[in-house]
Length: 339
Image 1 (spheres, rainbow, N blue to C red):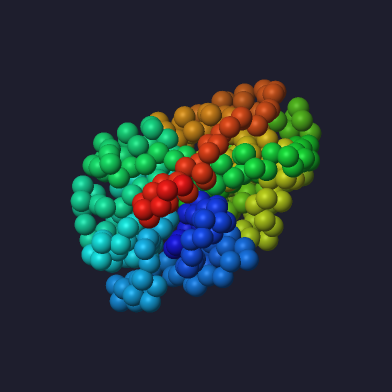
Image 2 (image 1 turned 120 degrees about the vertical axis):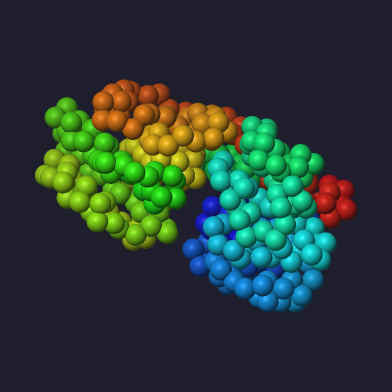
């Protein structure tokens, strides 16, 4: 089992215990940003980018019956899949988000139409989108999202932390990664302008801007914060000083573009708002709406209007329920074992 990106790490580690309970022996390889998700399970370090020889050595040393990987931006997981393709080792890929399907196989030595990777996808809409990109239907297995199953259906007995009034959290992402280009105004400024307007009605507001793990503070981001920071609108930028769980807990409202952390916020029954800065897949739109994430066009007027509205919150029932069991069942079937 190999993963580098945190999103993939969350999805794959949700399956470790269920698979171990079936007597399956797992050797873990995890990236620096995702090692924290392995818990008490021992793992080897997997670099984001490795060479062909390293990938071959990993498979030669382990002689696995199956390779299970995530889909990060580096080449490591794909180079392992390339070697599994050559050696006819069963390869399973756990998709962790609703976008960039073909790009996740950028380093593949084989064409999408030739892939023998079994891809576990979140829903039928995602499957249909991937088929349009050339993925073969028989290798796309609809299982649901194991991590969302874990946080929505196994943790709802925990008390909801309502957060501090007028404390907002913005989940930042590198703009080029999510496809925001050629903009005259930094997208964050629309939110900051809305919050500035709301201070007249709500009083002092505190905003935390949480950088993505691979994001650095840009001059544009700093300038936007400095432009709006004041006594009534206090803004702080943080990277890793406070855990995302604690940041979500202490916040009344969570705002972002589109990231798995927004689903984590909804699992904690936080009001969560997605700024529609770019066109996204229909599957992602549907997933966010099912989770109760509010989607708003990225302009000051619409953002202000949404933030003024009162919303009755409830955690979605059965959101991706059964995904862990579905993934386990498909893995056992591919291993030739009956569940």
